[in-house]
Image (cartoon, rainbow, N blue to C red; front, side):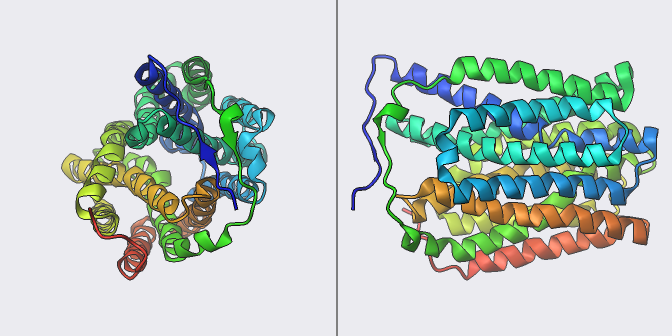
Length: 398
């Protein structure tokens, strides 16, 4: 059977082209993930302050977003041709920006849920497409080792939202914050399209449509671990700023904790893959899981800036690293079907993400606090690390 072939691109300015593609992809991640998915976290306490939004409703809105993310990932898994459809990916970009803008134009929880659902579909499609296309383009230009930096765009988007939301809140409250983040997403998208326009890629790619399911079987334990990671990390990703905003004496620090998350996330996508090459993917993933679990535990009852910073930095410094290492490991195990491996792993991740905030929000309202949800999140991280530890499909470090 013929395999997918990617003829190498050799141009006098391959390094410059690769850098432009990487920067364009990072800006795409800012739009799709840093803003499209995670702007909800710093804006949530403003909605709770101004509109009396309960944790249950907040968790439900997050759950709708992650349900959309799951459906988008499933669509990419079952219809991989979507990953090369310019109309589908362009529509996803418009939906991501539009759903962010429109969040500030209604006070209906039903409409919010629909908008977050549509935004989730768009985020999944864009994340998978950007990941696959940038990886292909960089590999063909001989700069595949840059791929970890791509996910740093999510950290940039998180930091931007953490810095921007307090300013936008002063100008227009919760609604102005959504509108401002939507405009920022539109600006980043336009800049990213200009930088990341691909050359000599699609026409040179020969896609092997023969089934390769056998190569995907080895990602099973990795995928289960990824489900647990999605369940565990998402509680912090959804409610961290809201938890801090309701902690006496730390209210003013709450939005800047999200900036700390983004700044810690930015280098993590380079640090963890580099560590994985040195000590092996299994050991690096176990270290990241352990550090993330420790941060979630510390966040329980954290009442000082130091404790909050530790929780924010360990969360931001690990979750994107885990994403980068897991997707890289999945691609290694299915080298001839890396797009589908990425889509399958993203589906598993989104299953955990969909359930986590819904359960956490309900439990937080029932128990008048986040102690139990955070303990359960820690338990999920431990379960995920066990699947990593007993997975025999990892290669020894070089």
